[in-house]
Length: 626
Ligand code: ZN
Image (tube, rainbow, N blue to C red; front, side, top):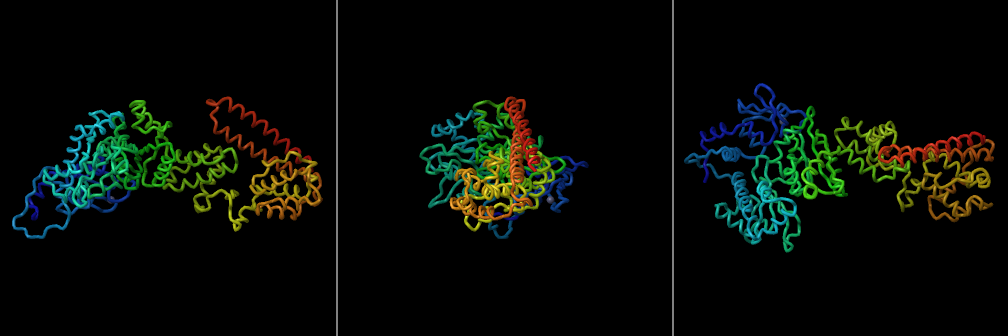
C-alpha cells in the first residue's frame, strides 16, 4: 500500500509545523531572551526549566537530559511514534497532503492504524454522538443535563453526546465514513465480540480531549435503569491515544488559563469541570475514572510551568467525607511531584461544584475555590481529629502521628516549619515540643510511630510485658510509688489523702489496679490480707503481675512509710494530675477563639485560674508534709 513519503513533502511538513506551537501543546513555554523559549522538560523530572525551544532554528534542546532535535523528533519522542507516523500526524495537523514514492518496495509496517485515523474516527464519533443528543431517544440524557443546570448551549460548548441504545449505530456510521472495523476498535469506539458492536450504548457521553483539542476518548454515564452495565461511568479503554493515567478531562479548555494564572483546579467529575468553567473557574480539570496519580501531576506541572523559582498552585476539591479525606491523603503522598503549593477546597455542606452551582449559583463555586486551604493543613486536621485532645495522651499521640506526615512529603524543608506551627495550633501543644517530635519522626521508623502506653484491647499474653509500665518512664514513677503505698500501707494512705481517684493514674494497668481497689471497698476496707484479696479479684494478667510487683517492691524511704512520706508522695501525684488538667485547659483555650466563643473562653479562663491555685496548694502540702 503505502510507500516511502516523498522528501519534498517531509520538508514541507517540517516548515509548516512550527516547533513552538507543536511543543506548546505539551509544555508551557515562556520567553527566555534571544528569541528562545523555555519550559519544563517533558522528558525528565526537573524543578527549574532547562528545556529550550528555538523557533528560528526550528530546534529544541534540553540542557538537563540532553534530548533534542527538530519538530518531527519531538513528536516521535513524546508520543512514542515512528518517523512515518510522526510525519503523518504533523501533516494532518498543518494540512499537508503526503504523497508516496513510486516503486518503493519496502515491506508494509506491521503496526496498527495510524494515529491520525484514530483521531479522525474519534472526531467523527463525537459529531455523531452530539447530533444524537437531539433525538427523541436521548430525552433522558437531556433531562440529566437540565437537572444539573446545563442548557443546550453548555452541552454544545462541551460537545456532550448520546450513544444510541441499539448498539450498532456508530459502527454503521463509521463504516459509511470508510473506517475499517480494525480502526474503529483501535480507536476504542467499537468492541469485538462474535461480531463488532458499539462500545457505548444508551449512555450520555462526554468527549475527552487532549491538550491540543483532539478528541481521544469518551466518558459515558449510565442514564437508563435497564442498562445491563451497572457501572455509573464507563470510559474508553486504553488505546494508543487514550492513556487513563495521563488523561485530564478539560485540559484543552483549561491549559491557557492554567499557564496564565499558574493555577489548576482538580475536581472529581465531568459535571464538576463543566460547572467550574461555566462559573468562571477556567482552570478546572478532572481525572477520568481513575485517581489522581503521578502521571497526572506531571502533565499539570508542564502546563503550570511549575518550578522552584515560580511555584504554581494546584487546588483539589474533595468531599468532606471519608472517601474525600482518603483521596486527600493519597494526593498528599504523591505531593513530591509538585513544587506547586497544593491546596484543598472543601465545601462544608459537602456539595460538589456541580450541585453548588445549581443550588447557590456561579459565585458560590468561585468562592469555594477562593476559600482553599493548604493540603497539609487539611490532612493534619483530619489526623488530629482522631485523637481526644482533652487528654495529654491524646495530644501526644496526635502530635506524633502528625509529625510522621511531615516526612511523607518531599518538600520537607519548605513545609516543616509551617507543619510544626500548624500541629502546635491544632493540638494546643508547645511549638518547641512539636519541633522536637517532627525531628524525631525523621529518624523514627513508621512501625515505632504508635504512641507508647496505649495497650491494644485483647492483646495476647505474649504482649504482657508491653502492657506493664516501663519502670524507666518518669511519668509513671509517682503512680507506682503511690500504688505501692496503697497496697502495702493502705491505712496510712487512707489517713492522709482521701481524695485519690482513678484520674490520678494515667497508665491503663495502674488505673485498673486503682479501680480494683475501689471495687473491693476502697482503702477503708483494707485488712491483713489486703494484697492477697486484691490479687484474687484481679482477672487481668497484667494487673495481677503489676500487683505482685507493687506488693513486694521496697518503699524508697529511709524512715519507712510514715504518714509524712505517704502524704508527700500522694500530694506530689495529685499535683501532677492538676498539672495535667492545667495543660488540658490551656490547650483548649488555645483552640478556642475568644471572639467567637467569649463565654466558653472566659469560663475556661476561670477554671484555669482555680486549677493553678489548687496546684500551688498541693505543692505546699507536699512540702509541708516532710
Ligand atoms: Zn530534559
